[in-house]
Length: 256
Ligand code: FPP
Image (cartoon, rainbow, N blue to C red; front, side, top):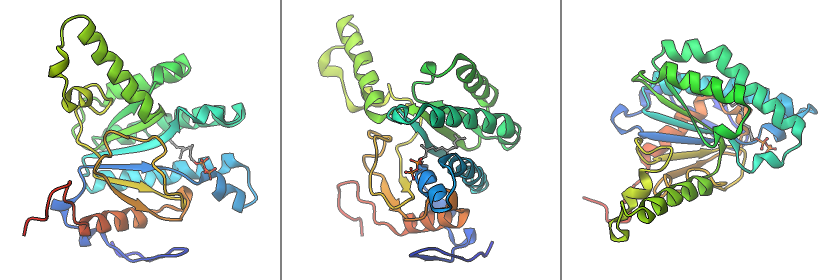
C-alpha cells in the first residue's frame, strides 16, 4: 500500500509493509481532537466537523483491525465535555448511536470487540443499553479490542478505583499493606488490557487532557497539527512507524 500525503507541516510517505509487525504497539490511544476547528476553517458549523470525525474514526478502526493491532482506545467524549452547549452534546450522542447502528455488523464480522469505557450509566437509558448490547454482541470476538471512551475522565476513573479499594479496606478484606499498583490497575476500565504504548493527539495541542492517566505512564507521545477529520490512515501508519524508532527504556538503561 503506497500512498502519498502532504501535510501542512509534515510530509508522510509510509507503507504498512514498512512496519515491523513484531514491534507494533500493543495498546494505541487517540485523542480525536480538532473537529470544531476543522469545521470553522471551512465556514461550517462544529457539527460538520464531528460528522467528518466519524469518517476518520471508521478508517482508523479498519486500519487498526487490518494491522491486527491488539487494542485501540479513542477519546470520544470526556467528563468535561458536558460543559459544551446542549445542542452539541445531543448531536454527539446521536452520532455515537448512529455510528453504532451503521458499523456494528462490520465490526462484528471483522472480529472486533467493542467496549465503552467511562460512566456510560449516566448517559440516556437508550444509549447506555445500546452500548451494552454492542459490547455483549462482540464480547467473544478475539480481534482488535476497540475501546470508545465516552463520558470518560482519567481522574474519575482513578477516583472510582480508590473508592473501591477503600471499601475493601473498610470491610476488612484488604490490609492496607497489601495495596499495590496492581490493586489500582485491577479496578480500572482497562483492567485486563496492556498499558498504553502509543498515544496520538492530532490538532496541534500538546496535552493529555485527562485521558488514560494511569495507563499512559510510559506511553510514547505522537503529535501532529492536522485536525482529526484530516487524520488519514497514512498519519496512523506514520505514527506507528515513528513509534518503532523510539528508544523505550521505562526508566532503566538501554540494553546493548
Ligand atoms: C474533539 O474535537 C472531539 C470531540 C469532543 C468528539 C469526538 C467525537 C467523534 C470524532 C465522533 C465519533 C466518535 C464515535 C465513538 C462514533 P473538538 O470539538 O474539541 O474540536 P476543537 O478543539 O477544534 O473545538
